[in-house]
Structures are given as structure tokens and as C-alpha cells.
Image 1: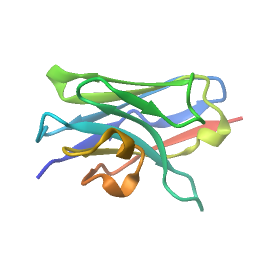
Image 2 (image 1 turned 120 degrees about the horizontal axis):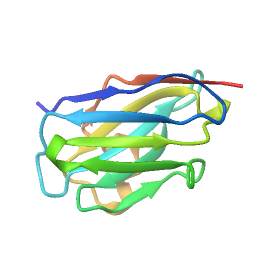
Image 3 (image 1 turned 90 degrees about the horizontal axis):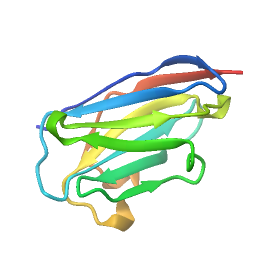
Image 4 (image 1 turned 135 degrees about the horizontal axis):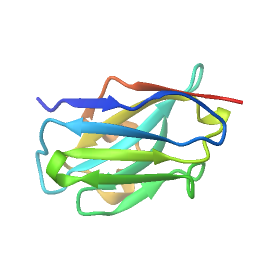
Length: 125
């Protein structure tokens, strides 16, 4: 069973940066994809960013130009570098992964088979 472990959340001030990490216990296919979603209190889980292990990436409009998703293949780890954080970025951030997603499905939460436990990011104004 694939296990995802997130880390790096915390409390920061508006304008600060933070980097989240997600380690996967394994990659089950050459089409492996990993993504970040977030869920704020009272809101639905929303897509943030995704990356196929081949390198293709996708971003939500709300984070384009501020957040960067990247990976370290040797460490089976994907990162989310979050810059110019704002209070509206406050949420629990979840890492997700799947071995068989087409590019157009990268932003759809219910397409992912594996999920981490989440890490809290709080941005104060």
C-alpha cells in the first residue's frame, strides 16, 4: 500500500514563504503523478498543483506565479514551494498520488487513489 507523508506546514505571516514536502513510499508506474490539494474550514477540497513524474505540471489559477511544485526523484519526494502567502491560503494541505492519470485529470481530487494525512498551513495578516 502506497503511503504518503506530508511535512512543512506551520504558521507564517502574510508575504512569507513556506515549503511543503510529501514523501511517497513507492511509485507504482511510469505515469506516476503527485499533487497538492487544500481544504479550508467550511470549504470543499480544491486543487493547488500537480506534477507527473515525467515533468508536466499544472497549477490552479489562484496560485500561479506564487507556488511552484517540484520533485526529487532520488528521494521519492514532491515539494510545494509557496511564496507570497496570503491569509486566503490558510488551509489543510493534502498530498495525493496516483499511477494512472491522464493530463486532464490531474486537477480532479476523486481521480487520486492515495492521500496523505494533511498538514496545516496558517497565514496571519
